[in-house]
Image (cartoon, rainbow, N blue to C red; front, side):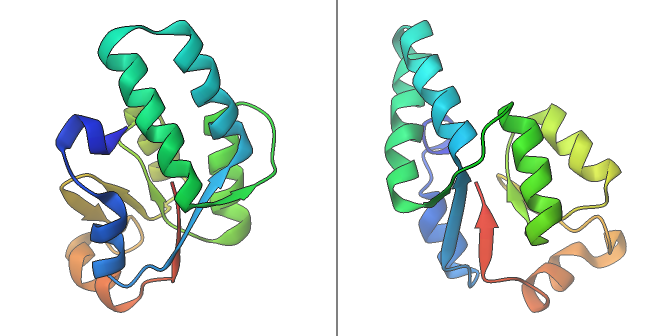
Length: 128
């Protein structure tokens, strides 16, 4: 829900850094549909925007708890993850996985100089 929270086009930013494929698990799409029904106001609007952004992604059929599925896919596909969810960030950090957090890039494998490593050793896909 980064675009609503921070007014940024995540796709433009990621494409500027060289990423050209965006992946979202179906579990995330399912969770967003639940949130749209559950919430009202700003949270509902943010969930609707997030769901509409999924149309710009390749949806990978994978059911389960969204965070668990994201971690599974990151491990299987060896791809970085874009998230502002602190709990998910902590899980990925423990696995020493690359992730994007709005406003900064983190490469847990090369903590000393993360920005340089992310720019020069990037994949072409990212999990949202």
